[in-house]
Length: 207
Image 1: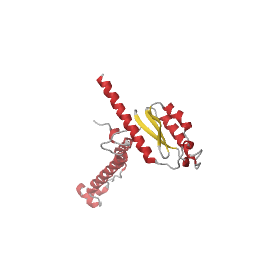
Image 2: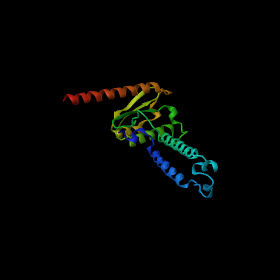
Image 3: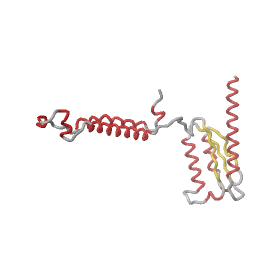
Image 4: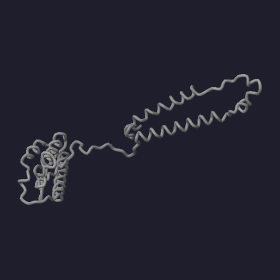
């Protein structure tokens, strides 16, 4: 049997189903009850409902309304629980994931519309990725008009951080920033990494 947590986003909402029997019991014990008195002297028991203006269908209607409320409440809770089918929990930063960071070092990155500058803020973001990305292999490409591989994809985050201080717009001779060649170079790095990994695994199996 499947775990409810695997098919419901928020299964805790189902605890609200306990309110249904509680409310039904409360309504049952608090409903007004007619006191039968001297009217019994004037009519038989099966005629009293007509004499007093009540019918047996009132009880049926009450139960129908309670059933409708219970069904509506259960459907609302089910919707809030978030049912899902064909769901698989994945993480983009799973162990052994590969990540290539593209760092723009063109002259426009020296603008200080953010503190300390666009380039400085980008370096801080890379430092955060390296600090929190345990189990992730990181590669770094610096680009302006042309891309340059600063570090290949590696689990040695210290090597990536070691290269950051030396990256600046002073290394760029031509003005401009072209992202497409950098993306193509990153794709090449990822493809080479996967090829090397597959070759290593095949070698291990062969041994």
